[in-house]
Amino acid sequence: MKKLIIYLVICLASLLNDRASLAQLKTLSPPLVVILDLKEASEQSYFGKKELQEANKKVDIYKKEVDVKQKYINNLHTELIKSGKSTVTPAFYESELRIAQRFVEDKNLEIADINKKLTIKINDYMKKAVMAYAREKKYDIVLPSQSVYTVYEPYNITIDFINYLNKEYKNE
Image (cartoon, rainbow, N blue to C red; front, side, top):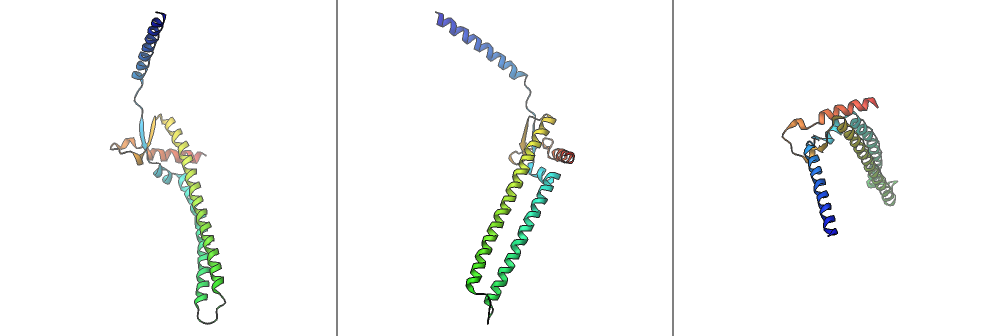
């Protein structure tokens, strides 16, 4: 009998708790959902443009180094295939070619590393900025525009977010 009474008390308490939870759910408003094109924001913001420009400067330096090495190899090849006396031996040319190939591979790895670091830096910055912006504007959910189809353009906050980023970047 005691077990039955305890069971009924627990069921009653659970039922009352469920009603309180249901009442709370009814008072909640629907979430405020907006859409943001992060790619456009990162490309159009002052921060994104500056970071991309710095990365491109480094990449251009590496590409120039590769071009110099390529010209050197081309000159060696031209010297090797000249008829008559050549100061370049096939073994020397092959050795220099292998060195140049390793050089180009290393530079390509360095360029890939620059791109990876740029992506990480921009993503980290954008994540923090989106969170701060959403809190300031009281948005509940910010969806990436690349994964959402929308017909109603006012839900897209990209331009306003770019202006926010530029204002914040100037204040840093």
